[in-house]
Structures are given as C-alpha cells and as structure tokens.
Image: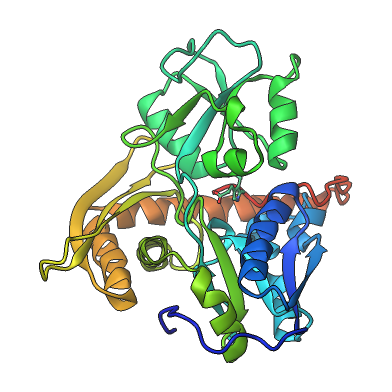
Length: 367
Ligand SMILES: NCc1[nH]cc(CCC(=O)O)c1CC(=O)O
C-alpha cells in the first residue's frame, strides 16, 4: 500500500465515478461528505451514489459471528467494487475489517471527527453521568468493548443490548417503557447527524477507550486502480491516517480473526522542524467481557510514514500480550465458540426464527 500522496492528473471532464455505500442515514451523510469533497476538487466530473442494504442490514437473526461478523456489512459492496459496478466505497472506518479481501485496499482516510464515545441519557433524566446512576440502572449497548469497560468501573450497573441504527436506538432509549437509563454511542455519529444536543457527556480514558478507527471515514478502492487512487488520495488527513493505521495494526496483531473488546486512544504529536520525528501517543486496552480482567498500555513512539505507524500498533499489541492479554483473548474466544455451538444446537432443534423487519436503518454489530 502506498502512502496517499498528492495528486496525479485530474480526471477527464465528464468522467463518471460511482460511489458505493450502505443506505443508513449516517452512511449517506458520510458519503455526501466524500462526494462533496471530490466534487469541490473536480467540478467537471460526475459522482453517482449507489446505496444498498447489505446482508447485515437485512438479516438480524442469523448468528452473526458464524459468518465472520464484521464482513457482513462490507462484502457485498466489495463485490460491486471488484466487479467494477462502483469505483469506491465509503465506510465508517471502524466497521471495516482489518483484513480486506484481495484486490481491495484503503485509498483514503479522512480527518477524524471526535473519536470518543458519548453518554446519552433518557430524555428527561435527572442524571448527568454514569457515576450518578443508581445501582441496577440499565446501560443500553451491544458492544462488548463498551460493556466490559463500563462494568470494570461501575460493576453495579446492568447492561442490555440496544440494536438498530442511531435514530432507532435513541427512540428506544426515550420510550418510557424501555428499560434503558442511558445508551452509549459514538460521538462522531451523533455530531454528523446533527444530534450533538443529545450528548450528555463525552467518555474517554480512564472510563472508556474508543473503538479502533472510530470517528474516521475510510474509502475503499480496487488495489489496481491508479486513477481512483489518485482521485481519493488528496482527501486523506495524514495524522488521522497514521493514527488509524497504528490502531488497525494493533487490532490485527491481537485479534487473530475474531473481533474482541479492544479500546484505544491515539494522539498525533507533530514535532517542530528540529529534526526529530513526529510521534503517536497510543493508549490501548483489552478487557474481559465482565470487566474483571484488564490489560492497558500507554506510550509515545516515533512515527515516520505508514510502516512506522503500523510498527507502533504491533509493538503496543506485543506489550499487551506480554502482560497477559493473550489469556483474556483466549477466554473470549472460548466463550464465543461455546455460544456458537449452543446456538447451532438450538437452531437445529427449533423452527427457524422469523426474520426481523430490519432495514437499511440497522447499524453493524457494535464495536
Ligand atoms: N457500530 C456502528 C457504528 N459504526 C460507526 C458508527 C459511528 C461513527 C463512527 O464511529 O465513525 C456507529 C454507531 C455507533 O457506534 O454509535
């Protein structure tokens, strides 16, 4: 993969580029950000948006993990990309698997929106923080990363799944009949959807480290398409790009094929022109699902191009493994396999469950 560098020749006037995306409201907003940025640079070109519901959008029942969870939301769009039906795909970077299919690559990562998680209280709640909530209060989240870190600090709170897109989750939260005292969402999604007023508090370390890639928009392209590579490269925000490469390499080194509760925070530290390297500060954690075990590392390391950025992710992952993260990961993997076996057994004996109405509005399995 080459560093997104500045531009080659502009596209021929009148050229048509097709942009693939999921059709949720947030995905469309993010796709419009990319389309507008491309159009501003290439007013003579045409950018068409192809929005689709993906398998993950349509089937809310099938055991997600048995399909390799995360790729459910990206693989059909990637098939369109590889077939030449679209020329680029706009994703929330945090929903992109760390291993892309062969023939695909990241062409650009745009400047990150606020990467933190956000606490959203039920409408009319008198509470303003997690610390404020009485014992037994229900936090709505389907993310093991969010759940584990919240239980670690607030073991007296209860977790309940809260699925659906951002609008759906807010509606469920505010329903007086729902059990939720609050939900946790990515601040970036709320901000981009003009829902900033719903943010009760921003959460960050030591309470909650965000997901790998959270808040960033990633553009996926064909790895042999030099024209589209040079079209999208100028949209890259280099500090975001390097931080996200480091985060994705951390995850790739730790996960061994399955998604696990990894939290991360990175900060890009540019150094004045004194000859020293820019640096990335990275803090990362792995937690047991119930929050009882926890490994965290934090350091500031030199970054100099994408190779060094990935090296930072690998180094920090190795330090976590040296400090016992492997045992936590193995336990999570074992629990996952047992749950899948139980599920397989249940679906072999029970009639197939009805498919939920679902829709383009569903967001991916939470991370
Ligand atoms: N899990 C789904 C998802 N994927 C990206 C975002 C928000 C935008 C982002 O983090 O870039 C969300 C919703 C959320 O977690 O609240």
